[in-house]
Length: 595
Image 1: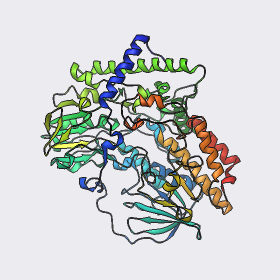
Image 2 (image 1 turned 45 degrees about the vertical axis):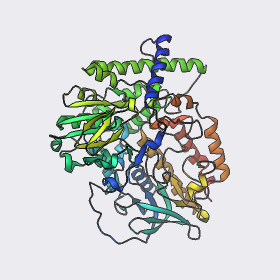
Image 3 (image 1 turned 30 degrees about the vertical axis):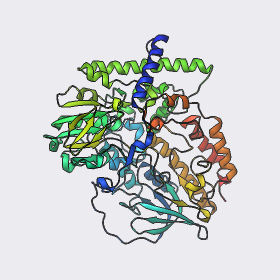
Image 4 (image 1 turned 135 degrees about the vertical axis):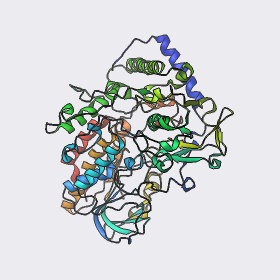
């Protein structure tokens, strides 16, 4: 773990106290309940601003080999890997008007990925594509999703502008009945759910929010009809507008500079400042990343995963702020090899953490010219308490005369809204438009949100089966009593900051399960004993991070200050080890889950 700069014991004690005070300024008794779901009252939730009204079609009542719920990268990769296994009819059902998932919905100004594009974008060699930027803009990512879908013929059976409303197992027919909101009722031998982690958008539960008569929209439903312009900027419709932006996380960091270029005035309502490190985006060439060598993309992707998972690597191929600060992700991802005395480890970790945070706070002071504004923009918490952000324009935007930072920490967020204003500390900020950069209910989508009921053998609903003891799976993919149902995602598996890499490994595993079942004429279903053994393995090595998150500033990592308890939530030895475990299990034990 790097330790850049000496930090004295006295300084560490002062930082702990400052972090505690700043946390108490922001924690709220309502925790996650402070947010609302974005229902039809706000219009933009139900509407698809990119596809318009869906085309009329007759409901389907046919059969397919595999139904995939979700057309983001998880669903697309599942489809591509199934094609690689020779599976014929693969139907992807997607509520958006095209493939892309979060990159279909999120097209706000300035949108880029914060993971290097050469490791984030999957199947680069398979599609013959080399990204144009080190950190790809959203449109490049969305077009790559389409490129994969076209190459693997996933459009043929796809259903767009369609949501799956229920999944029901028919034991007599050994198929799943798939119902949708378009009246479809078709059958599938296998179902793969890939509903993602960023699909249920949320709004702040501000008193009076429903009375505001100005224009509003969520960043994942950006209204270019109102703002003008495109993701590249040119928002001429805001030239005479007073615009408020709520949210200063990864989305707000990108939106604020673009809106500030064109709006009459911008008010940024901040509860907690993000860490804002250097991005240093630039155009890249094939030579820059060694794309002339076979296996270059996998080598680079594996190298990044190894470093950010705390594994040793001879060389850092990506060499960015993620990899240079990888040691500080230890409290975020339970994957680091802790050797020796725990007290010594924690002391070294805290020292390195303090040095990094001091560096980031110093950057704020260097960039932001107004001392009062700079002080409000300084992050006072440990590095892994919130997702790091990276920008070379965000802090600079506060040097503009038309940008005002409104700190809401002392009022625990915005107090209330009127017909034409946002109220903070008794001051009314009159607005023409309020933009919600408030993100999503992370990890709560599809089955876990309750929006997609799944009924297995005997009509038992999956969430009801999990109600008493919590989720019970084998490797996070399959559950006893729910044959041929495969779930993709981070639950009871392993995660990484590069989520598409995780999804691709999951897709490979899911396709292998289907191929093995097809070859044997068998069902995919783990025994209860296999589930018990897996849950026990997760619990046995679960890291002790509960204390760390209890001390963090409120955010989605610690359920808005409520806390993140230790427990069997993820594979405790990290993604690299988990992927190797899956490969070994497919070779040695796959037959045991088939019956």
